[in-house]
Amino acid sequence: MVRGLLAPRWLLVHLLALAAVVACFRLGWWQWDRSQESTGTLQNLGYALQWPLFGLFVPFMYWRMWKLDKERRESEPAAEPVAVEEPEVPVPHSRRSPTEWRSAAPAEPVDDAMAQYNSYLASLSARDGE
Image 1 (cartoon, one colour):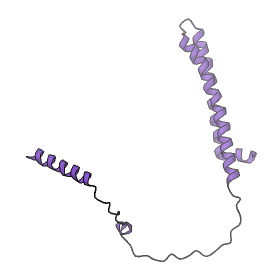
Image 2 (spheres, rainbow, N blue to C red):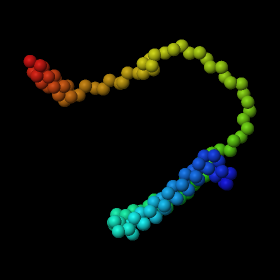
Image 3 (cartoon, one colour):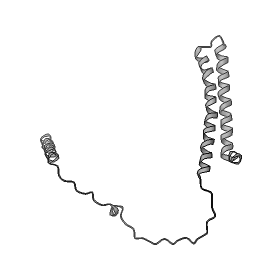
Image 4 (cartoon, rainbow, N blue to C red):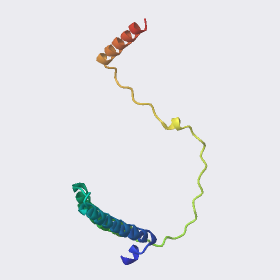
């Protein structure tokens, strides 16, 4: 478990998570100082409360990533030694057209109402063309 957390990818995640938490709490402290100044507003006070919440979201996401990675590692089958076999030589195939594999759609029975509607549309189209 600890060995997985010391992988190079996880070391980068550790550093980024720590930097994000420190930055969020520092921004919250800065907004608190701004709200206490004579030009401070309630907006600064709101941000002073909001930034630490963002900072607390980072450890939650860190925990969630660790949990998902742990589940992924546990679900992977253990690597078993595989006997080395000679690779199969592929049989050369003649090159075929992509349309050769397609088959025509089955013909649907003609619907009388649809045929009447299509002829009506054709007469409208012919009338517009005149």
